[in-house]
Length: 444
View 1 (cartoon, rainbow, N blue to C red):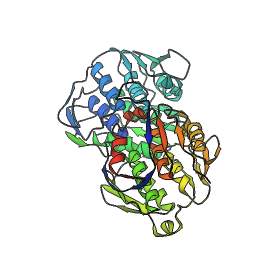
View 2 (cartoon, rainbow, N blue to C red; view 1 turned 45 degrees about the horizontal axis):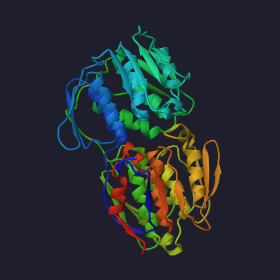
View 3 (cartoon, one colour; view 1 turned 180 degrees about the vertical axis):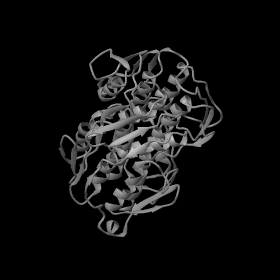
View 4 (tube, one colour; view 1 turned 180 degrees about the horizontal axis):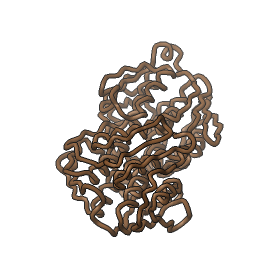
């Protein structure tokens, strides 16, 4: 492998973590805003844009679709909106393993009156998209599966869209289906009601979507979490200039490090770029960490964590049982914090982990056990009992950025840890290990 993509990274035991971290921009917000800016009327300047594999895939796709964009400074992108459907009517798009890009672009392309192919890496061929395709077909879209039914790659064709005005979609597999559908519906030019079958998971991610649409002039009417109405006159209009929040999911690793390190005299760790005013649901990770005994401070745009007094006295965090539906990505970091708890932690309602970059329930269970943890894995839950004796381990990351970042925290357990394929963090946080090193005090 090249020096830029090392096969593995050896982390020595970490004695303490303390300091301040400036977070990269949110992947979820960046990719939503890039697409909405492309569909909007007018030029949009996006600042603090995340530079990562996922956002590069989105920008490359927009470029192939005829959307003019350019780098206008560090972490700044200018998008010339097309005021509706993409100008290019025939394109092949490769989107890697960028789930947000695949789901949102598939929905938008279905209403653009062109011929498109949407593809990705082998893992993307295993990530379901059938519920979204079914909803788009119900509105008249013509989409074919080029491999297994229900999964990418897809062929999207020009079609006569009907004026049915109402469509339903299952809510219990991935919130990205609803996100893609809602963001694309203004292209139809008619009032459309989206009804949710079953319980909607990951509701905070839908809040991010609704907030982004609102910034571009489209107000979706919401009836609880069961129905969403996009008005007939909905049109995207550029707000001119927008700033992307720091990534709340990425904040979780540093906040957990501050709490764990604080058990033995380290901490605090402050993250800048998210805080009390964040629109991201994963900011509530701080509440869960507080339940485990962390001391949390927060302002409008920063959060700080260390161990609370009781936890510091005991030298352990508190085990907890938590419904993690509201923090699906950051809940992985709770699994790591559970290794430093005083009993068995149970993370429930995490079924969406199984359709992410990898089957995260299975992957977390296997890798946590390597460290000596007691693990019980279920269809939508994970039980973690801390190691009685920590083991040095080589951690497989399954081409999943969050696996690599999560397991860096195992070095706080006093053992060396080898992270295989550390370069996979380029998906959302290319500089993660350098930033972690900047706030780390290694053991003697």
